[in-house]
Amino acid sequence: MACSFAWPKLTALTGHHPPTGSPLRHPPPAAAHLPLVPPLFVLPSLRDWVHLVIRFSSMHGVKQPRNPWSDGPEHIAQCPIKSNKNYTQEIVLTDEVGTLWWHAHSDWSRATVHGAIIIKPKGVNYPYRPLPDPDEKTIIIASWYNGNVEDEFEKARNLLGPAPSDAYTINGHAGNCFRDCEANVSVISVESSKTYLLHIVNAVLNEEMFFAIDDHNLTVVAMDGAYVAPITFPYIMLGPGNTMDVLLTTKNESTTNYYMAAGYYHSGGPDPLTLSATALLQYKSDAVMPTCSADFLPTHEDFDKAENFTNSIKSKDPQVVPPMTPGRQYVIEIAAYGPNTFNPPSRSSLSNISYVGKCNDSLEYNATFPHNQSEYGPTLHGNNVILLEYGDVVDIVFQGTSRGAETHPMHVHGYSFFLLGRNYSTFNNNSLINTVNPPVLNTVSVPTNGWAAIRFKADNPGVWFIHCHLERHATWGMATALIVKEGNNVTMQTEPNGHASLC
Image (tube, rainbow, N blue to C red; front, side):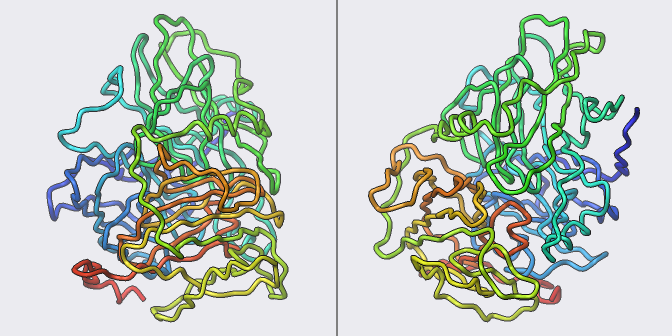
């Protein structure tokens, strides 16, 4: 049986760092289905600018210093870009390295509007050995819906679902193990006795994902745009929004090809799709085809393997972690299903507030968040924010609760942060934290009924979104925003021409 996934042809968003004023152009996306878009390669110097003319996207993990106007989330620092219109985004790169990604940030359109960003700083030698082959590989794991993904968004918004995706994909295809499909398999071609650099993105809407290549080890060397101490596993796990740089060393000789696969990790919540996506690691086109299977993946509920991998990630080098500013610790309780009386009811909240974005250019907000209360009351609607002074060193502790208990991938726009620790317990100030070699991330998986503590310096003035990267939870209000004030001689960039007209 041949299984058709209809990918219309579009011009790719790709290329090298353009000269100033020379935008890369990406056409408006097709109505429902998009092809895999090749990665955007940039080779920046420190604080380089990349000019893009695109329809609407967020550069996930790019810190955008002093430039919230191009951050991407609708109704935060910019209004949605209307149909058949465009907006020039100015992307400011600082110390990001390796793999990040871009995606739409309006409703659930990121299901099909996304791609990789690969950042290679100029004049910097690659710090890991063996040096990888110049033929780098990009692997994007994503969700596929047979129907219009906006219909699933409407179901979620009205608490009628959403249904699980119809398939997972690797580089746009579910694979030929999927329901007896004869074709539609992505092929990653390699040669024997080489080391390849894989750029891996989890663009799936609502699940953490295991990824593995049969009978091969994977060495993680970067995550979320920052180097990590190398760790080698037969599998990796990524939360929605996470990216990884992975070294793959091929076999000395091989007369067979091998499957790679991506399958979900179930930490709680609704049961997602049980079928895994597969792709082919091809040594030779005429090599023996392996038996169609994804049995080399961890099982969907393998808690030990998920935790062993996640807790092994540390920074490449010792970190200089600044001390927290007194009074700047915020404990935010996460609830996927809270008590409320709304019609339709809002299910998800942070510290009992279900976030509602402003659909106009109003400056109104409530800066009393979070309340750090110890007991749950009815969930309220609001646009509560965390207001910070420039230069504050801030700790945010995300505390999971039993209300809709599952892992929550919390993403902070405008910042990377030190992950000080995470555990399956209730946080207190005696909880163990790591200030020696914490990894630097932009999205952290908060354990089921547990906590994750992050620290960052508020040195990027502007308005920055914080939200769960499970799309159904963000839709239901599991979000807030940071407002970081301007400092002495440190101000936001001037609002670009035409920005206000979007509203």
